[in-house]
Image 1 (cartoon, rainbow, N blue to C red):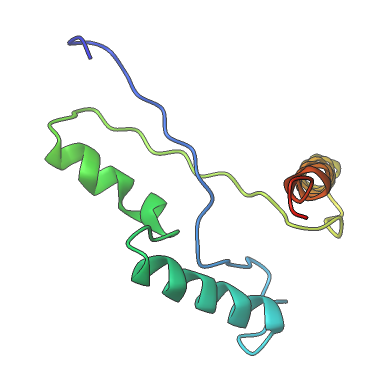
Image 2 (image 1 turned 135 degrees about the vertical axis):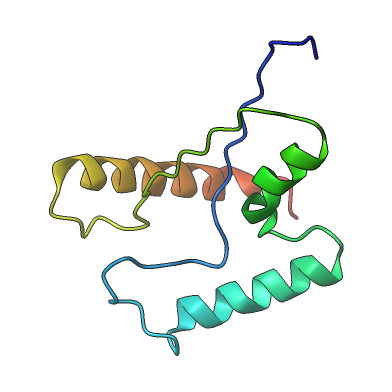
Length: 106
């Protein structure tokens, strides 16, 4: 990378969070996400690595680090049209990847 260059990183944040307190701590989604995080850590590829990007970039010598966080709903419940559209896009991507992901499995 040349001086004056930039890097952009974008990843989901794990564990899952909810900004309106409608996701109870004992929900199956929270439990599944905790187990997934635990398994990823045991494999040496933690899915919560995005939480450490800012510090890792500083340690690597990057300066003028700018962090933007975006809310990305995981369902079509939002009332706000923008967030509803984002969630529907995400849902479509998930389902389209899911249909193709198992095509090579006998």
